[in-house]
Amino acid sequence: MQQSPFPAFSVSPSSARRLTTCARAHYWAVYGSWGGWDDALPPSGPRRSAYILKTGQSLPGLVGTLVHAFARTAFDAKRADIPFNAEAAANAVRVAFMQAIENTQLRKYVVDPKTYPVVLELFYDDDVAVASRVQRCAADLDDALEALQLNGHFLAVMEGRAVVARCEEREQVRLRWPDAIEGGPDDFAVWVVPDLVYRLVDDPTGWVIVDWKTGNVDAASVDQLGMYATWLGTVAGAESRHVAAVAVYLRHYVEKVGQGTPEARAEAVGNMQAAAVKARALVEDDDVETNQPKPMEAFEQLPEGSKACRYCAFRRLCGRG
Ligand code: SF4
Image (cartoon, rainbow, N blue to C red; front, side, top):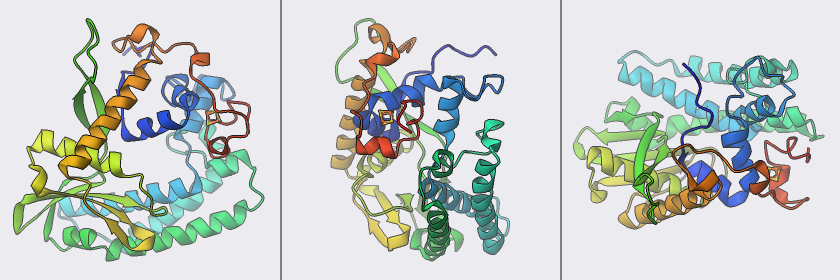
């Protein structure tokens, strides 16, 4: 199958966040890395490099990915009605954590970045305290796994009081443009990947959306959870009064609720529409059908010395790392 020259136009809560931070990062993540999975490309070339860096993970990001993998293994076992061995699953993710570090040191990501994602701190080799950060993140992983297994939502599923409706499946919501495009499509796609959606056995009309967080408590989940609730409303016809959206901050034993309300949904939809308009302005002639980007220079970089650049996966491509 021939690959299309540009990716299909879409937004997501994470691309909306990226667009708010830095347009150039949006370029690398969406356009500059497109097709970079072709291992015939030279690893030092910009397209392959951008793809390698896009699939890369920071150490805290890796912790999050592995905690989600553990939860998915548990819920998949429950859905398939087979026993779940928590100890074996926890050991598997601990091994995966150490292997990601070893693979980065061995540069395995150059061969297969999807299977062996680069650990960004080691790739950039710019953190003198990287060994202690590895240790700290390994401890964070253990803490988060323990907190997950004590969490009420996790237990509701594993003890059979709740039925999993979705677990990290990629879902699409279609939103209308806030301003009409002459001759263009009426709507655009927003992609969402809810961590967990379930219904209680003794209250099948009620839906609960859960977003596992392994970082610090912040205000960043409004768009994510608001869009998950919007998606649930469109596909399942779930009325907002029956939807609870919860961000669970595992390491802090904190839960934030209330982001499935009509107000939260409206805010999230408005933010996605604003992000889509911003992304459309970076496409040649506003043409979201072909989604051909403007030249890279149109995607503005942050000023030299910006704090966000220090943590950006693409800093080598920008000559800043
Ligand atoms: S290094 Fe800085 S300017 Fe370059 S993409 Fe990242 S955040 Fe943007």
